[in-house]
Image (tube, rainbow, N blue to C red; front, side, top):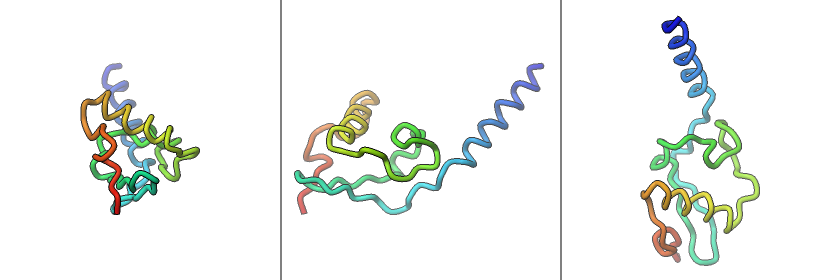
Length: 94
């Protein structure tokens, strides 16, 4: 029974990772009045896509706004105690 259950869990994990979209290789630049924010998927690959996206396929994040971006990014950085949390750390004037 334990072997069967372990096999089932392993199959689900492999199938789930196969469905995940390939993250963009180049950084994404989000335009903002206070300075553009460069987002690198590479540095966030330990996170599950669904933490920000609707599903593992990725794609555009619906309803992205200043408040949503700050809720997703800054709140996560504070919770995980990783990444920048101050405005000029992310927002760069050209």
